[in-house]
Length: 320
Image: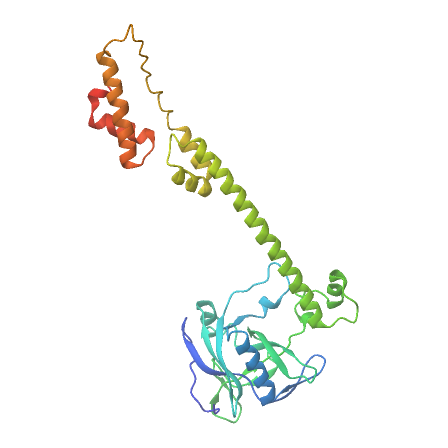
């Protein structure tokens, strides 16, 4: 990208700017050592990105997603994909803006790029974690948006890259590394990678415990639902009642409580010496109960539904 290339002054939500420069070739001072940004560095960074699924990289606001607090801000300003090496411009990637990111850069609220990554012992970047929108740049890179006048030259823009931001510059945003080592039970000589590994191990263990707890609670609820459905099988379809109980047990209990118990079927007692023809009323009751039972079988519904349907179809059987 040459300095006279025309670039947009605004960007729309969902718009993708292709091959945006993320870092030029060169050596740049970091907090504790020189950062070596040569082709070998970018090749190993891209290899790591691809090995981890070539997932989109988060561009956040002012590195707030890197803050180790429970209320850290992980909103996306944009998503970065297609990391590549440009022979002249260094590391580049496609940048797709969200609505909030597009609004921030279009209104010049935040104007510059700021990458965060891990480096090896030689100072070469090995893994990119996030890219932030910030107003405190460090290393000059090619522009994305918002043209500015360069003294003695034509229209041009400047966007800068801020590598490995100091936790001390984000007031109250990061826990002291030595305190982390103590809290994690690590020796004083533990490396940053060991600290991160211990944190991840703790997070994985917590997630596993939560998963096991969720499975146990699910099994207990299903057992409880089975028992409730079985106890009320005469009123409702067992499978339907079980599903309702799992979804909301209070609603299931209220529904069952509102259904009247099925009346006991009349018993005919035949004594050979006194057997007689059933009365007309008994015949009506028998026909009514038979109709209700047949309706429940045919429609696979609960007793109350069958009772109401039969009474609507054959009111003469329900006249008291």
